[in-house]
Amino acid sequence: MTTDGQVYELRPWLGQGRSLKDSARMASMDKKTARSYRDDERLPSQRKSGREYCTRVDPFESVWVDVQRKLEAEPRLKA
Image (tube, rainbow, N blue to C red; front, top):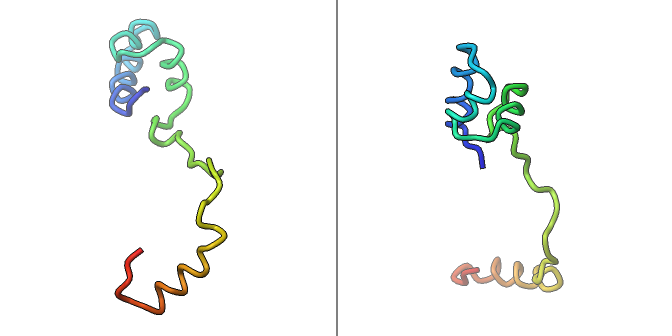
């Protein structure tokens, strides 16, 4: 996994006119990855997208309304 720090390290090497291969080696990444970050201004942390889907069925879906009602009725109960 490529970190923001590696990309920060890569860009000055590329800016100095070094080859993509040498810059990637100095930033400890593959040259295909370095090419990707050379062509895209975003950092790795900015490229990540949030997951919009559920990975499993919610086990409390059928009983949650009752549980929520009981929690609201008795403030001393904890979830």
